[in-house]
Image (cartoon, rainbow, N blue to C red; front, side, top):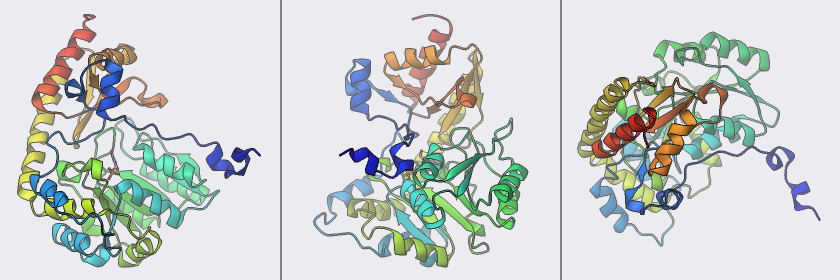
Length: 364
Ligand SMILES: Cc1ncc(COP(=O)(O)O)c(C=O)c1O
């Protein structure tokens, strides 16, 4: 029997997502101890989680299933976001909510719009769902081509569009007027605000007004909980109920639940760290601007996209990796001469810049 022949055809031939490896694997690759790895490839938070979250996890009742109705999570998030609990659903990372939105709205053969370049999970989710992808490239400034998206949606009868704002990996925001235009065109618009706390710009205020708007957020970035996998969505009560109905009952584990509630009780500390990361991002931006051969793209997130005009992107990337500094490269044609750096601690960023400069000058 060929077991492969029994797999759904669109999944058997899937082009999979390229994830980032954990520090121990990166350390082996560079041949250095793990504590010397400078991991700037996952937009993680170098400050780690709130100490209150760590204490809450230590006290969590790990032998008990978590609350399938997510009561304590939703009520803590209601206080944090200002929206009622009926608007809120949590997932095992916002990645899970992306997947659930595909399950809810997309059938095999449907078309999904992708505003390239953007976060790769939308394209991956569409492929998992067996959907076709209509690529509507962002413009020269990486802004979403709103007219193009609406016309592609009409042409292909597409209903779902994801807008990351700030966009990963380009760092730019999508203005509210553009989001309103997409909403008015009748599309289900998912505004992915994974980096909201780094810029303070949100479409959450539009959620009570538009049934076709979903705002996604995560605890991975600002709250330093990427390893726990917890994110949430803000949407109309009808849609929130639909997602509650189809999610697996215990999708958010009890440690993540405890950590989210504790983190939302420690926002002053966590948002203070976010501010430090923003200040550091601006410092790194200035250093990059002063480095010849690199063109950094202004960012509202905790990362910066760098373009190299020398055709030496691969060489610089490899040179950094050989010295234990890991950044994120992309396989798409449009980003082939770029990589994205996540903002690390000041010494990590200084090491990155110094190594980059030496590699660009042809040193070793
Ligand atoms: C735009 C965007 N959305 C979602 C995610 C994933 O978030 P989570 O860790 O909550 O799954 C990321 C992570 O890099 C991201 O950049």
